[in-house]
Length: 145
Image 1 (tube, rainbow, N blue to C red):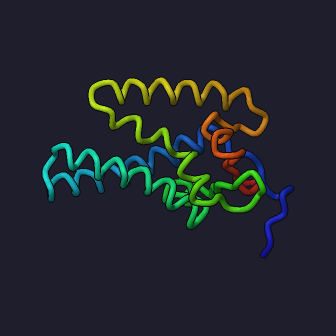
Image 2: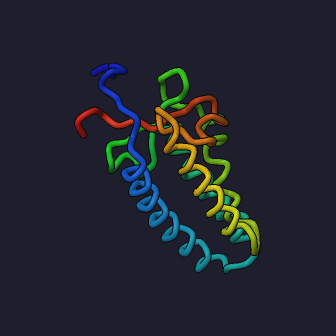
Image 3: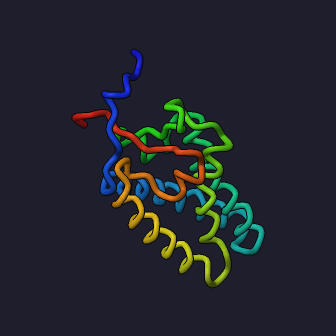
């Protein structure tokens, strides 16, 4: 079955946040398990950050979405309407590594989220700065879902 652009609509912010919350829950379980196996030191922080970044970027590139996005019927598309490349996905999700900066990272991450949401609310396609940075990626949902 081919995808027709008119069948897709920009994914609304609440469903995108719900999908991200589900992904955060998945990532927390994985990262805590990693910490329990190797300890919660600098190595855990570095490896965990890379795994989180690759979870989001890798799944978006390979399957068009993460566990949360796919569960909620969302897909990530590149600026050309096809699934994003790994490079686009890595750019789009680069901000996820910011939260791992010791002490100030979580505060910066919250600030970025607020900024992204403000920009997305004003964008006709609900695209954030991370989507623009990645070459015009967008998160879509089948119309009527």
